Length: 184
Length: 138
Image (cartoon, rainbow over all chains, first blue to last red; front, side):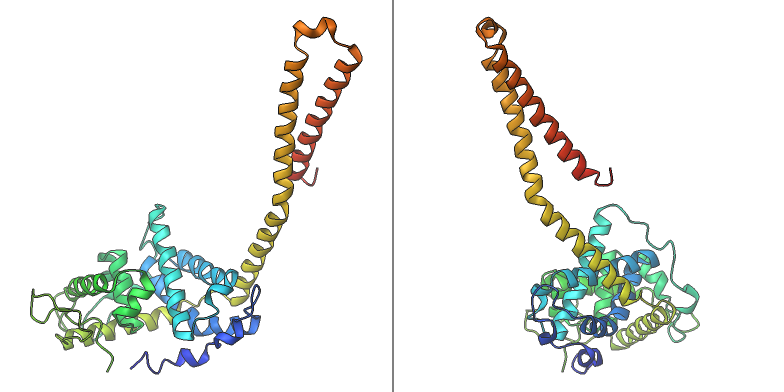
């Protein structure tokens, strides 16, 4: 399973490396942590916000907050830390939506390259049709391979809510599934 | 086996599933296609958009940390400035009351001059400190 043998988990620093207080997370440990997680979180932010500038900014803010509050993460193991980073990123996305800075999909990332040859599924178009929360849930479930408890931890939603919302999101997403060579 | 998080949470359509921690896999073909498509899309995103360098984040965090440290260091000074300003206002009000016009005839001119001078001095000093702390370059 992707979670059990997550290669990023091995690449991440152990909690001992950032257990010291204050400026604890050394540059090397941070580099390793960043390399292990940045691409995943950046893709997540890109997929949900669909804006490169927003994704870049929120990614920096996510890791910045981690650096500024090392004590709160010192006891976390690598997988928990990963979920914690997703939690920060998700909260930042929601703050952005609440602040009214919502101009999604002005810059759809590479729409031509996103069509699956098997299913004629245009993920970018599908994401465009979904609500931000649905995008978050589907991404965490399908791309990050998280289960309900992990998604709940990463989004702050109740586990039962995750189940229901994910089910609805999945049903919405399925509407965009078309057989190969379909009319869409 | 890891439960399938995207599986239908109902044991049958429309029926609520008890919170048992087990999942009922349904529509596995759709799920598989969706997962494939999502992962292909994620790979495309990762290939086309590289995250900003870690150094930029370290720099940003360092800058923010310094700003926070400066704010922390300035806080007592700011509190004292505010207290000084409030004290000056209180002193001015007290002087105004104490040496009101009806008492002026009996007031010693030297005392009056000293009081006015002190109040002016305190107010000017507070204003200068506040001004300098806001505009250090001046």
